[in-house]
Length: 224
Image (tube, rainbow, N blue to C red):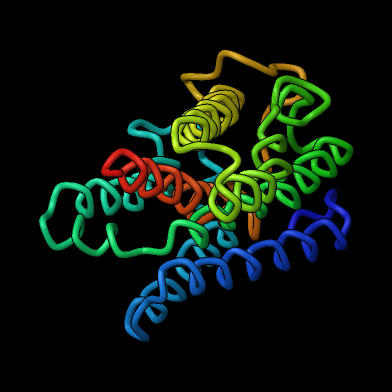
């Protein structure tokens, strides 16, 4: 890990990733082979980042695309295929919403990375990143919406749509803040962290999983 980053920040993020794996297990109830593939994916991305493959941010096509594109293609395949849609429809809606509490430690990690000069302030809750709101309000939606029914489906739908918007906001800022031919933001303090170990797991696993949870929830709510 980058020596400029305090060790406790990396430790916190590893714990955050373990929490995400537990939420993955709880929400999706995957078969053992899926877990095996997940750990292979995490190990591969971690190793590639550790070896510095993603440090070359000026290459075309961007090497960073290998971090997030495979997961996005998998999500698309699940929603396109009949078997994938059938599997999504039987997932527990409440468990899909608990996934979003992981956004709280993620945002704390991002703030600590900003303090360590590894990401720009705009990627934190002190800047333009309001994604922590989704994490803080997820238990409210679960308790007062999915359990007690005080919040109707339309409001839960709206919460998920806003949650996707908050997620896309930070993802776009993160991509545009990396030193690359496409950089548009944060030239004084660019985004260095997400191409390093272990923080590469954020775009490789946590972000796609959070996005999938929103999309799967929207599909179930719209079918109602």
